[in-house]
Every structure is written in structure tokens, then in C-alpha cells.
Image 1: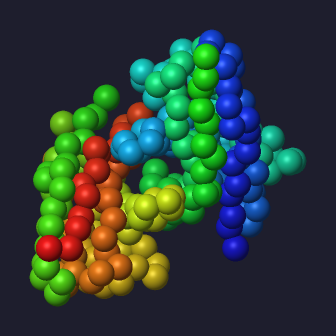
Image 2 (image 1 turned 180 degrees about the horizontal axis):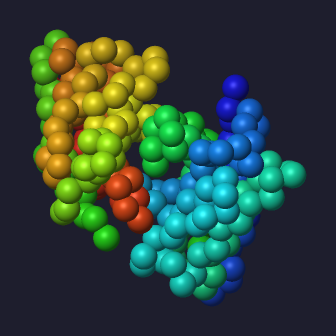
Length: 122
Length: 113
């Protein structure tokens, strides 16, 4: 059974750097074809795709946020970390991590974490 | 970036009736070498994460009721719920994974009439 859980600070201050950790079980990010992504959703708004990391360490980023985002993986800890610099009030959102299996579902996300709400305060 | 545009933004359908949600991509998401459309559909209920319904534009995820179906190719896609149930009230999103970034549509809110 695949599970993912996001963790991180519920509140960050303006201009600070946000670090979020996705801890997963039921799969290995060293297995060919596996990917983990980050998606966010501001309150009452749509989903926004942020970043994706593949089993081979290939990484993809949102065009508009690329300069602020870094995604990394720690295969031994079964974790994926997303950092976002220079946080602003518009970054207040629920942040999700999700699993994908390229060969099976392509770039779709078949299993999602419950999400973690992050509020940016002044 | 590929822009995904859904229509309508909201929809009210009577129980037992058909619901149709459209998704249009700003460029084709059909990969000619394998004839796959790189398009997924998700359902999101209030307070929950999204749930994958359809991938490769028309392949139903395991466990998804067969009243949900996906169709279309190239730039125009449709999610159809053949007979609306009360449990289908949710926001529905399409997503392309043809090219990075793997963008989502703006969502369509489905309600009961």
C-alpha cells in the first residue's frame, strides 16, 4: 500500500524559505519509472503543478516558479524535499505531494498525500 | 507552457442525468510515436486531495466506477459521467503531462440541480 505524507511549518514569514518534506512508503524512488511530484492549491482555488522528480533524478519545474524551487530526493529515507525561496502571501496554500508511475499512468498522479497547509504571514 | 482550459466553470445536473465536462489544451498532447494522449482527469471533493479518475485520456483508474469515461484526442477532451450520483458532487480537473510543466485546468465545479 502506497502512502505519502507532507510535513513542514504551518506558518512562514514573508521572504523566508519554505522547506517541505514528503515521506512515503510502499514504493522506492530508486525503482525505474517512479516519480514524486508537488502540487499546491490556494484556498478556494485551482491546483497548481510545482515540480516533479524521477527515479533517475531528472527534475521538472513550474516555469513561473522555477527560480524559487528546488526538489531533491533521499532514497534511503524515502523522502522528497521541496524548497521554495522568498515566500510571499500569494504562496499561502495547501501543498500536496503525489506518486506517479510513468509506464502505467504517465505523468499522472495516482496516489496523493493529504496535504499540508502553509500560511505566509508578515 | 501548455494552457488547459476547462468548460464550463460550473455545472448543475439532475441526479441520474449525464454530466459532460470539456478540456481544451493550447497545443496537442497526442504523442504520435505511441498514439497516446497525455491527459488525465481528477475528482476533488471538499477537504480531500484529488483522486485520479482517468489517464491516457480514456483509461479508467482501478476502482473508478464505469459511469466515468474519458474521450477525445489532440487538443479536445471530455469527461462524461453517464448517470450522476449524489457522491459525484466535486470539482473536476484535467491535467496534461505531455510537456513540462504538467499543467492543470482551472477546474469545473459539479453540483446537483
